[in-house]
Image 1 (cartoon, helix red, strand yellow):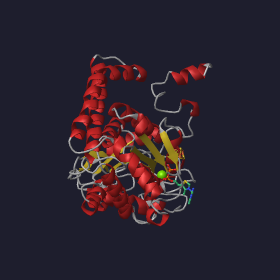
Image 2 (cartoon, rainbow, N blue to C red; image 1 turned 135 degrees about the horizontal axis):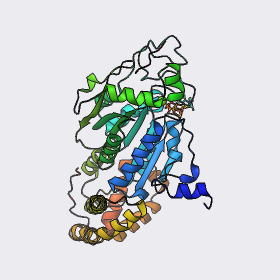
Image 3 (tube, helix red, strand yellow; image 1 turned 45 degrees about the horizontal axis):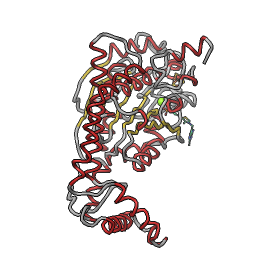
Image 4 (cartoon, rainbow, N blue to C red; image 1 turned 180 degrees about the vertical axis):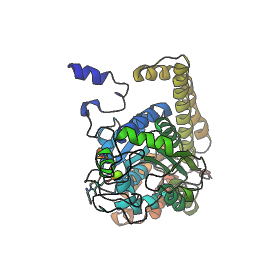
Length: 414
Ligand SMILES: Cc1ncc(C[n+]2csc(CCOP(=O)(O)OP(=O)(O)O)c2C)c(N)n1
Ligand code: SF4
Ligand SMILES: [Mg+2]
Protein backbone atom coordinates (compact mmCIF):
# COMPACT_ATOMS: atom_id res chain seq x y z
CA UNK A 1 0.00 0.00 0.00
CA UNK A 2 2.18 2.80 -1.22
CA UNK A 3 -0.52 5.40 -1.90
CA UNK A 4 -1.63 8.03 0.62
CA UNK A 5 -4.83 6.05 1.16
CA UNK A 6 -2.78 2.92 1.68
CA UNK A 7 -0.65 4.64 4.32
CA UNK A 8 -3.75 5.94 6.02
CA UNK A 9 -5.25 2.45 6.11
CA UNK A 10 -2.06 0.85 7.40
CA UNK A 11 -1.84 3.47 10.18
CA UNK A 12 -5.36 2.77 11.45
CA UNK A 13 -5.48 1.52 15.06
CA UNK A 14 -7.74 -1.25 13.75
CA UNK A 15 -5.29 -2.38 11.06
CA UNK A 16 -4.45 -5.57 12.97
CA UNK A 17 -8.07 -6.61 13.50
CA UNK A 18 -9.83 -5.42 10.36
CA UNK A 19 -9.05 -6.16 6.70
CA UNK A 20 -8.06 -2.68 5.66
CA UNK A 21 -7.69 -3.75 2.03
CA UNK A 22 -11.47 -4.26 2.01
CA UNK A 23 -12.17 -0.66 3.04
CA UNK A 24 -14.23 1.39 2.44
CA UNK A 25 -17.00 -0.83 3.78
CA UNK A 26 -20.53 -1.05 2.35
CA UNK A 27 -22.44 0.34 5.34
CA UNK A 28 -24.43 3.58 4.95
CA UNK A 29 -23.52 6.77 6.82
CA UNK A 30 -25.04 6.67 10.31
CA UNK A 31 -25.59 2.89 10.25
CA UNK A 32 -24.85 1.31 13.64
CA UNK A 33 -22.98 -1.73 12.32
CA UNK A 34 -19.65 0.08 11.97
CA UNK A 35 -19.46 1.09 15.61
CA UNK A 36 -20.35 -2.45 16.68
CA UNK A 37 -17.52 -3.85 14.59
CA UNK A 38 -15.21 -1.33 16.18
CA UNK A 39 -16.39 -2.41 19.65
CA UNK A 40 -15.88 -6.04 18.70
CA UNK A 41 -12.35 -5.44 17.38
CA UNK A 42 -11.48 -3.53 20.55
CA UNK A 43 -12.95 -6.30 22.73
CA UNK A 44 -10.86 -8.93 20.96
CA UNK A 45 -7.71 -6.89 21.60
CA UNK A 46 -8.57 -6.24 25.21
CA UNK A 47 -9.58 -9.83 25.95
CA UNK A 48 -6.09 -11.10 25.26
CA UNK A 49 -7.41 -14.17 23.45
CA UNK A 50 -5.25 -15.54 20.69
CA UNK A 51 -6.65 -14.08 17.41
CA UNK A 52 -5.47 -17.22 15.63
CA UNK A 53 -7.94 -19.21 17.68
CA UNK A 54 -10.88 -16.94 16.90
CA UNK A 55 -13.45 -17.65 14.22
CA UNK A 56 -16.20 -15.22 13.17
CA UNK A 57 -19.32 -16.54 11.46
CA UNK A 58 -22.00 -14.34 9.87
CA UNK A 59 -25.23 -15.03 8.04
CA UNK A 60 -26.64 -12.91 5.21
CA UNK A 61 -27.59 -9.26 5.47
CA UNK A 62 -25.85 -5.93 5.97
CA UNK A 63 -24.63 -7.23 9.35
CA UNK A 64 -23.68 -10.48 7.68
CA UNK A 65 -20.97 -8.61 5.83
CA UNK A 66 -18.99 -8.32 9.07
CA UNK A 67 -17.32 -11.67 8.40
CA UNK A 68 -15.68 -10.18 5.32
CA UNK A 69 -14.08 -7.27 7.14
CA UNK A 70 -12.51 -8.89 10.18
CA UNK A 71 -8.93 -10.01 10.09
CA UNK A 72 -9.63 -13.39 11.67
CA UNK A 73 -10.68 -16.69 10.19
CA UNK A 74 -14.26 -16.08 9.17
CA UNK A 75 -17.17 -17.58 7.30
CA UNK A 76 -19.98 -15.74 5.52
CA UNK A 77 -22.65 -18.43 5.49
CA UNK A 78 -26.12 -18.68 3.99
CA UNK A 79 -29.13 -16.83 5.39
CA UNK A 80 -30.03 -17.97 8.90
CA UNK A 81 -27.33 -20.61 9.07
CA UNK A 82 -24.61 -18.83 11.02
CA UNK A 83 -25.39 -20.69 14.26
CA UNK A 84 -25.32 -24.24 12.84
CA UNK A 85 -22.09 -23.48 10.97
CA UNK A 86 -20.56 -21.95 14.10
CA UNK A 87 -21.71 -24.98 16.11
CA UNK A 88 -19.95 -27.25 13.61
CA UNK A 89 -16.75 -25.21 13.90
CA UNK A 90 -16.84 -25.42 17.69
CA UNK A 91 -17.51 -29.17 17.72
CA UNK A 92 -14.75 -29.83 15.19
CA UNK A 93 -12.22 -27.89 17.26
CA UNK A 94 -13.35 -27.01 20.80
CA UNK A 95 -10.18 -24.97 21.34
CA UNK A 96 -11.51 -22.22 19.08
CA UNK A 97 -13.47 -19.22 20.30
CA UNK A 98 -16.40 -18.97 17.93
CA UNK A 99 -18.32 -15.72 17.47
CA UNK A 100 -21.53 -15.32 15.49
CA UNK A 101 -22.09 -11.75 14.30
CA UNK A 102 -25.35 -11.27 12.43
CA UNK A 103 -28.61 -9.35 12.06
CA UNK A 104 -31.81 -9.93 14.00
CA UNK A 105 -33.60 -10.99 10.81
CA UNK A 106 -30.98 -13.59 10.06
CA UNK A 107 -30.74 -14.86 13.65
CA UNK A 108 -34.32 -14.67 14.91
CA UNK A 109 -36.28 -14.88 11.64
CA UNK A 110 -35.07 -17.50 9.18
CA UNK A 111 -32.47 -18.75 11.69
CA UNK A 112 -34.74 -18.57 14.75
CA UNK A 113 -34.92 -22.29 15.29
CA UNK A 114 -31.12 -22.61 15.36
CA UNK A 115 -30.86 -19.69 17.76
CA UNK A 116 -33.20 -21.12 20.39
CA UNK A 117 -31.65 -24.58 20.24
CA UNK A 118 -28.09 -23.29 20.56
CA UNK A 119 -29.23 -21.35 23.64
CA UNK A 120 -31.03 -24.40 25.00
CA UNK A 121 -27.91 -26.53 24.63
CA UNK A 122 -25.67 -23.85 26.13
CA UNK A 123 -23.47 -24.22 23.07
CA UNK A 124 -20.14 -22.48 23.54
CA UNK A 125 -20.76 -19.50 21.24
CA UNK A 126 -20.69 -15.73 21.51
CA UNK A 127 -23.61 -14.31 19.52
CA UNK A 128 -23.59 -10.60 18.69
CA UNK A 129 -26.96 -9.61 17.26
CA UNK A 130 -27.33 -6.28 15.49
CA UNK A 131 -31.01 -5.42 15.93
CA UNK A 132 -32.08 -2.61 13.58
CA UNK A 133 -35.73 -3.70 13.48
CA UNK A 134 -35.60 -4.37 9.74
CA UNK A 135 -34.28 -6.53 6.93
CA UNK A 136 -31.79 -3.86 5.90
CA UNK A 137 -30.08 -5.51 3.00
CA UNK A 138 -33.26 -6.45 1.15
CA UNK A 139 -35.09 -3.14 1.35
CA UNK A 140 -36.57 -2.73 4.81
CA UNK A 141 -39.13 -5.48 5.34
CA UNK A 142 -40.69 -6.21 8.74
CA UNK A 143 -38.68 -8.58 10.98
CA UNK A 144 -39.54 -10.51 14.16
CA UNK A 145 -38.38 -7.54 16.25
CA UNK A 146 -39.95 -4.63 14.35
CA UNK A 147 -41.97 -2.72 16.98
CA UNK A 148 -45.72 -2.78 16.67
CA UNK A 149 -47.00 0.14 14.52
CA UNK A 150 -43.62 0.85 12.86
CA UNK A 151 -43.65 1.20 9.10
CA UNK A 152 -41.75 -1.26 6.93
CA UNK A 153 -41.87 -1.92 3.20
CA UNK A 154 -44.14 -4.90 3.91
CA UNK A 155 -46.26 -3.06 6.51
CA UNK A 156 -46.82 0.34 4.89
CA UNK A 157 -49.73 1.10 7.25
CA UNK A 158 -47.81 0.09 10.36
CA UNK A 159 -46.75 -3.26 11.78
CA UNK A 160 -49.69 -5.13 13.30
CA UNK A 161 -47.63 -8.09 14.55
CA UNK A 162 -46.24 -8.53 18.06
CA UNK A 163 -42.46 -8.48 18.15
CA UNK A 164 -40.00 -10.69 20.02
CA UNK A 165 -37.99 -9.27 22.85
CA UNK A 166 -34.76 -11.12 22.10
CA UNK A 167 -33.40 -11.08 25.69
CA UNK A 168 -36.67 -12.63 26.90
CA UNK A 169 -36.59 -15.22 24.12
CA UNK A 170 -32.98 -16.11 24.89
CA UNK A 171 -33.63 -16.30 28.62
CA UNK A 172 -36.59 -18.63 28.10
CA UNK A 173 -34.50 -20.78 25.76
CA UNK A 174 -31.68 -21.17 28.33
CA UNK A 175 -28.89 -18.73 27.35
CA UNK A 176 -26.43 -18.30 30.21
CA UNK A 177 -25.28 -14.75 29.37
CA UNK A 178 -27.61 -12.07 28.02
CA UNK A 179 -26.89 -8.38 27.58
CA UNK A 180 -28.49 -5.59 25.60
CA UNK A 181 -27.02 -2.24 24.62
CA UNK A 182 -27.55 0.28 21.85
CA UNK A 183 -24.90 1.33 19.38
CA UNK A 184 -24.63 4.55 21.40
CA UNK A 185 -23.19 2.48 24.27
CA UNK A 186 -20.04 1.53 22.42
CA UNK A 187 -17.93 1.04 25.55
CA UNK A 188 -20.53 -1.21 27.17
CA UNK A 189 -20.76 -3.22 23.97
CA UNK A 190 -16.98 -3.67 24.09
CA UNK A 191 -17.10 -4.70 27.76
CA UNK A 192 -19.88 -7.21 27.23
CA UNK A 193 -18.17 -8.78 24.21
CA UNK A 194 -14.89 -8.99 26.13
CA UNK A 195 -16.67 -10.68 29.03
CA UNK A 196 -18.43 -13.08 26.70
CA UNK A 197 -15.20 -13.99 24.89
CA UNK A 198 -13.68 -15.04 28.20
CA UNK A 199 -16.51 -17.19 29.48
CA UNK A 200 -17.90 -20.58 28.59
CA UNK A 201 -21.38 -21.27 27.33
CA UNK A 202 -23.92 -19.49 25.16
CA UNK A 203 -23.61 -15.69 25.33
CA UNK A 204 -26.09 -13.42 23.59
CA UNK A 205 -25.41 -9.71 23.16
CA UNK A 206 -28.08 -7.64 21.45
CA UNK A 207 -27.16 -4.23 20.09
CA UNK A 208 -30.07 -1.98 19.09
CA UNK A 209 -28.85 0.13 16.21
CA UNK A 210 -30.11 2.50 13.53
CA UNK A 211 -30.73 1.49 9.94
CA UNK A 212 -30.70 5.01 8.62
CA UNK A 213 -31.49 4.25 5.00
CA UNK A 214 -34.57 2.13 5.54
CA UNK A 215 -36.05 2.04 9.04
CA UNK A 216 -35.31 5.65 9.97
CA UNK A 217 -36.15 7.10 6.57
CA UNK A 218 -39.38 5.18 6.20
CA UNK A 219 -40.51 6.11 9.71
CA UNK A 220 -39.24 9.69 9.32
CA UNK A 221 -37.09 9.46 12.38
CA UNK A 222 -34.25 11.66 11.25
CA UNK A 223 -30.65 10.58 10.79
CA UNK A 224 -28.18 8.44 12.71
CA UNK A 225 -27.32 11.19 15.18
CA UNK A 226 -31.00 11.81 15.96
CA UNK A 227 -31.36 8.14 16.75
CA UNK A 228 -28.28 8.07 18.99
CA UNK A 229 -29.81 10.96 20.88
CA UNK A 230 -33.05 9.01 21.16
CA UNK A 231 -31.09 6.06 22.56
CA UNK A 232 -29.39 8.30 25.08
CA UNK A 233 -32.63 9.85 26.27
CA UNK A 234 -34.67 6.66 26.33
CA UNK A 235 -32.32 3.94 27.57
CA UNK A 236 -32.92 2.65 31.07
CA UNK A 237 -29.92 0.89 32.59
CA UNK A 238 -31.10 -2.06 34.64
CA UNK A 239 -28.56 -4.83 35.23
CA UNK A 240 -30.25 -8.06 36.19
CA UNK A 241 -33.62 -6.83 34.89
CA UNK A 242 -36.41 -9.35 34.60
CA UNK A 243 -36.25 -10.18 30.88
CA UNK A 244 -40.06 -10.22 30.73
CA UNK A 245 -39.80 -6.48 31.09
CA UNK A 246 -37.50 -5.84 28.15
CA UNK A 247 -40.07 -5.39 25.38
CA UNK A 248 -39.51 -2.40 23.10
CA UNK A 249 -42.46 -0.29 21.95
CA UNK A 250 -42.26 1.92 18.90
CA UNK A 251 -39.91 4.76 19.87
CA UNK A 252 -40.39 3.79 23.52
CA UNK A 253 -38.01 3.13 26.40
CA UNK A 254 -35.20 0.62 25.93
CA UNK A 255 -34.11 -1.40 28.95
CA UNK A 256 -30.35 -2.02 28.65
CA UNK A 257 -27.73 -3.81 30.74
CA UNK A 258 -26.50 -7.28 31.59
CA UNK A 259 -29.60 -9.29 32.38
CA UNK A 260 -28.28 -12.83 32.81
CA UNK A 261 -24.88 -14.24 33.75
CA UNK A 262 -25.02 -17.76 35.14
CA UNK A 263 -23.14 -21.02 34.93
CA UNK A 264 -24.35 -24.38 33.80
CA UNK A 265 -22.54 -27.15 31.91
CA UNK A 266 -21.95 -26.31 28.28
CA UNK A 267 -22.98 -28.67 25.50
CA UNK A 268 -19.45 -30.07 25.23
CA UNK A 269 -19.13 -30.53 28.98
CA UNK A 270 -22.47 -32.33 29.14
CA UNK A 271 -21.56 -34.52 26.20
CA UNK A 272 -18.17 -35.35 27.76
CA UNK A 273 -19.83 -36.30 31.01
CA UNK A 274 -22.19 -38.61 29.20
CA UNK A 275 -19.36 -40.23 27.22
CA UNK A 276 -17.30 -40.77 30.37
CA UNK A 277 -20.28 -42.54 31.90
CA UNK A 278 -20.65 -44.72 28.82
CA UNK A 279 -17.04 -45.42 27.92
CA UNK A 280 -15.41 -45.21 31.29
CA UNK A 281 -12.09 -43.88 32.47
CA UNK A 282 -10.36 -43.98 29.13
CA UNK A 283 -12.64 -41.57 27.36
CA UNK A 284 -10.64 -38.94 25.53
CA UNK A 285 -11.83 -35.87 23.71
CA UNK A 286 -10.16 -35.48 20.32
CA UNK A 287 -7.08 -37.45 21.30
CA UNK A 288 -6.52 -35.54 24.50
CA UNK A 289 -6.93 -36.80 28.01
CA UNK A 290 -8.90 -34.65 30.36
CA UNK A 291 -5.90 -33.65 32.52
CA UNK A 292 -4.09 -32.69 29.34
CA UNK A 293 -6.97 -30.50 28.25
CA UNK A 294 -7.31 -28.95 31.71
CA UNK A 295 -3.60 -28.14 31.74
CA UNK A 296 -3.91 -26.49 28.34
CA UNK A 297 -6.87 -24.45 29.47
CA UNK A 298 -4.94 -23.35 32.53
CA UNK A 299 -1.95 -22.36 30.42
CA UNK A 300 -4.19 -20.42 28.03
CA UNK A 301 -5.79 -18.58 30.96
CA UNK A 302 -2.32 -17.62 32.20
CA UNK A 303 -1.30 -16.38 28.76
CA UNK A 304 -4.48 -14.28 28.54
CA UNK A 305 -3.91 -12.85 32.03
CA UNK A 306 -0.34 -11.90 31.04
CA UNK A 307 -1.50 -10.16 27.85
CA UNK A 308 -4.17 -8.26 29.75
CA UNK A 309 -1.71 -7.26 32.46
CA UNK A 310 0.65 -5.93 29.79
CA UNK A 311 -2.14 -3.89 28.24
CA UNK A 312 -3.24 -2.54 31.62
CA UNK A 313 0.36 -1.54 32.36
CA UNK A 314 0.60 0.27 29.03
CA UNK A 315 -2.67 2.06 29.69
CA UNK A 316 -1.63 3.03 33.22
CA UNK A 317 1.38 4.76 31.71
CA UNK A 318 -1.11 6.82 29.71
CA UNK A 319 0.30 5.80 26.38
CA UNK A 320 -1.78 5.20 23.32
CA UNK A 321 0.01 2.04 22.36
CA UNK A 322 -0.28 0.75 18.82
CA UNK A 323 -1.48 -2.82 18.56
CA UNK A 324 1.87 -4.13 17.36
CA UNK A 325 3.80 -2.60 20.28
CA UNK A 326 1.21 -3.99 22.65
CA UNK A 327 1.82 -7.40 21.24
CA UNK A 328 5.56 -7.03 21.78
CA UNK A 329 5.19 -5.91 25.39
CA UNK A 330 2.66 -8.63 26.02
CA UNK A 331 5.20 -11.11 24.73
CA UNK A 332 7.73 -9.88 27.32
CA UNK A 333 5.34 -10.28 30.22
CA UNK A 334 4.17 -13.53 28.72
CA UNK A 335 7.56 -15.15 29.15
CA UNK A 336 7.25 -16.18 32.77
CA UNK A 337 3.72 -17.59 32.64
CA UNK A 338 4.52 -19.26 29.36
CA UNK A 339 7.27 -21.20 31.14
CA UNK A 340 4.89 -22.06 33.90
CA UNK A 341 2.34 -23.09 31.35
CA UNK A 342 4.84 -25.42 29.75
CA UNK A 343 5.54 -27.00 33.10
CA UNK A 344 1.90 -27.34 34.08
CA UNK A 345 0.83 -29.95 31.55
CA UNK A 346 3.85 -32.06 32.42
CA UNK A 347 2.92 -31.93 36.08
CA UNK A 348 -0.65 -32.99 35.54
CA UNK A 349 0.25 -35.45 32.88
CA UNK A 350 2.90 -37.20 34.95
CA UNK A 351 0.66 -39.39 37.03
CA UNK A 352 -2.26 -40.62 35.04
CA UNK A 353 -1.58 -40.42 31.35
CA UNK A 354 0.88 -41.15 28.59
CA UNK A 355 2.30 -38.56 26.22
CA UNK A 356 0.05 -37.45 23.36
CA UNK A 357 2.29 -39.33 20.95
CA UNK A 358 1.87 -42.55 22.79
CA UNK A 359 -1.89 -42.28 22.78
CA UNK A 360 -2.86 -40.61 19.56
CA UNK A 361 -0.77 -42.50 17.05
CA UNK A 362 -1.84 -46.00 17.97
CA UNK A 363 -5.43 -44.75 18.17
CA UNK A 364 -5.27 -43.52 14.63
CA UNK A 365 -3.68 -46.73 13.41
CA UNK A 366 -6.25 -48.82 15.17
CA UNK A 367 -9.05 -46.70 13.76
CA UNK A 368 -7.65 -47.11 10.26
CA UNK A 369 -7.52 -50.89 10.66
CA UNK A 370 -11.10 -51.11 11.91
CA UNK A 371 -13.57 -52.36 9.30
CA UNK A 372 -15.45 -49.65 7.43
CA UNK A 373 -18.79 -50.76 8.85
CA UNK A 374 -17.56 -50.34 12.40
CA UNK A 375 -16.04 -46.98 11.63
CA UNK A 376 -19.38 -45.71 10.44
CA UNK A 377 -21.41 -46.57 13.52
CA UNK A 378 -22.61 -44.13 16.14
CA UNK A 379 -20.21 -41.73 17.83
CA UNK A 380 -20.37 -43.51 21.17
CA UNK A 381 -19.37 -46.82 19.67
CA UNK A 382 -16.63 -45.09 17.75
CA UNK A 383 -15.36 -43.55 20.96
CA UNK A 384 -15.36 -46.98 22.55
CA UNK A 385 -13.19 -48.30 19.74
CA UNK A 386 -10.84 -45.37 20.16
CA UNK A 387 -10.78 -45.77 23.89
CA UNK A 388 -10.04 -49.50 23.59
CA UNK A 389 -7.21 -48.86 21.19
CA UNK A 390 -5.81 -46.22 23.48
CA UNK A 391 -5.98 -48.63 26.39
CA UNK A 392 -4.16 -51.27 24.40
CA UNK A 393 -1.47 -48.82 23.43
CA UNK A 394 -0.90 -47.55 26.96
CA UNK A 395 -2.86 -49.66 29.39
CA UNK A 396 -1.42 -48.45 32.67
CA UNK A 397 -1.02 -44.82 31.84
CA UNK A 398 -4.59 -44.16 30.77
CA UNK A 399 -5.85 -46.26 33.64
CA UNK A 400 -7.26 -43.94 36.26
CA UNK A 401 -8.39 -40.73 34.74
CA UNK A 402 -11.58 -40.62 36.69
CA UNK A 403 -12.13 -37.03 35.77
CA UNK A 404 -15.41 -35.30 36.15
CA UNK A 405 -15.76 -32.67 33.49
CA UNK A 406 -16.15 -29.18 34.93
CA UNK A 407 -17.09 -29.78 34.24
CA UNK A 408 -38.15 10.71 18.23
CA UNK A 409 -37.08 11.18 19.11
CA UNK A 410 -37.64 14.45 18.35
CA UNK A 411 -39.12 14.03 14.96
CA UNK A 412 -42.38 12.17 14.97
CA UNK A 413 -43.81 10.20 12.14
CA UNK A 414 -46.21 12.20 10.06
C1 LIG B 1 -32.86 -18.25 1.91
C2 LIG B 1 -32.84 -16.78 1.73
N1 LIG B 1 -33.95 -16.07 1.88
C3 LIG B 1 -33.93 -14.74 1.75
C4 LIG B 1 -32.76 -14.09 1.44
C5 LIG B 1 -32.76 -12.61 1.25
N2 LIG B 1 -32.15 -11.88 2.34
C6 LIG B 1 -30.88 -11.51 2.28
S1 LIG B 1 -30.42 -10.58 3.59
C7 LIG B 1 -31.98 -10.66 4.23
C8 LIG B 1 -32.36 -9.93 5.47
C9 LIG B 1 -31.28 -9.74 6.48
O1 LIG B 1 -31.80 -9.03 7.57
P1 LIG B 1 -31.01 -8.90 8.91
O2 LIG B 1 -30.51 -10.21 9.32
O3 LIG B 1 -31.86 -8.19 9.88
O4 LIG B 1 -29.72 -8.06 8.51
P2 LIG B 1 -29.54 -6.52 8.19
O5 LIG B 1 -29.47 -6.43 6.70
O6 LIG B 1 -30.72 -5.79 8.75
O7 LIG B 1 -28.29 -6.16 8.87
C10 LIG B 1 -32.83 -11.41 3.42
C11 LIG B 1 -34.25 -11.66 3.71
C12 LIG B 1 -31.59 -14.87 1.29
N3 LIG B 1 -30.42 -14.30 1.01
N4 LIG B 1 -31.65 -16.20 1.42
S1 SF4 C 1 -29.31 -0.47 4.64
FE1 SF4 C 1 -29.54 -0.05 6.81
S2 SF4 C 1 -28.55 -1.77 7.86
FE2 SF4 C 1 -27.86 -1.78 5.72
S3 SF4 C 1 -25.94 -0.63 5.78
FE3 SF4 C 1 -27.57 0.81 5.25
S4 SF4 C 1 -28.19 1.69 7.20
FE4 SF4 C 1 -27.02 -0.16 7.67
MG1 LIG D 1 -31.84 -6.24 10.57
